[in-house]
Image (tube, rainbow, N blue to C red; front, top):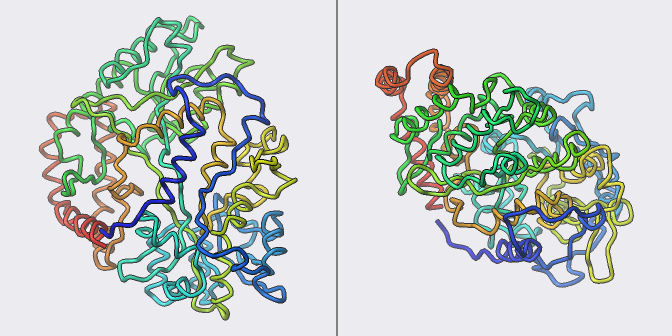
Length: 542
């Protein structure tokens, strides 16, 4: 793997570290929305060109390009204030080719492809599909355009290894400009500290201690309603993500790399340990009895009913501390370190990596102007617009450069992020997500969680590729990708089905396991492992 400097990430983490300075074990005292929404301006963005070397507007007369993009069921909307401001500053506007009533991204994408008429700008949820479109001649290779006309994007390619690994396809071309991430942490382990206090318990530090605490939650009536209705361990991803529990014993239902060798974890000893323990936890009432059917609203259902005790989730889990104070005075969710597994290792498998952004179709008549617009999104001014919105409308700036989100953002009926997105901020485009913006909208509990996890980089596996959709998220050659999908189309549902039956106790894990391994072999798991190994070696030697 090419070794590049990590100046950008280092600068951002130093910025985050300064904001998170102080103790990390307890949430800070409640702050006003105004102070919680403040962030000091930091030199976290590269400025590879001299002042004035990026002239605006980009075009001498207003220019419109078409765009295909649908993020979080929101087709691109040119009327969003942020994008109106973007057009005013750059001279470039974007017109969506997706009907506002069509929220099905996959359906809309396939309709566009089948029509033969491609938008000038194309973004899509699947990096694999975008790269395939590029190899098939639908997206332009952007390498030369970036080198000649996009110095800010080029800076990231030269200095941010994760960004470059995401951007470059296996054929050496760049078919889309990624959306970059500048914070390491992603999700956290959360627990009800008010329940711990009521039962005289300490925050667990190992998986065995976690078991004992959760069993006490189940049997000790910490919500005080006289009913045994507590759900100690819950998750809102349900059977789409059983791995969050398996991680407690350093396992998963996915592929994993140990010492440079790819493994399919259901074939390993840790998996046997994990499933055996999870079956026990389910039988004891520790694991959510509706784990496989609860659905994505499970967290809100259980927390609103004052029944949820512990989960692995995003920073938003800390919002319940204020959201539910009137109903349940003293409710307090706090983040805690990942419990040490059976080998004594503390590890957090979720981590932020750059994601899909947008590319330029081969039907675009003016890709030079468009790549300059893409580059504007990586300038300090462009990133400020996309992350913070419009000064005076969503944020103010103090004399020393400190930015503060305004009350309309912090006190909206939507979440701060939801409100910003309603104006066109934080969309899935090629840009860089600002660490300072995210800190500014975080609740006190979320800020404490960030301090804790960001201060322990040793918990993360940053040198390894990220996880997505049941495999290590690496670029595979087209022929390998086709074979991988064919093999896993039979293996994935089989593993999920067997896992569910073992946890629910409808079949016996110990007696089933030898036949399970044999069946995986017969369905081609060894070939799938070899494919992922080739992808991993390409990733590490690019």
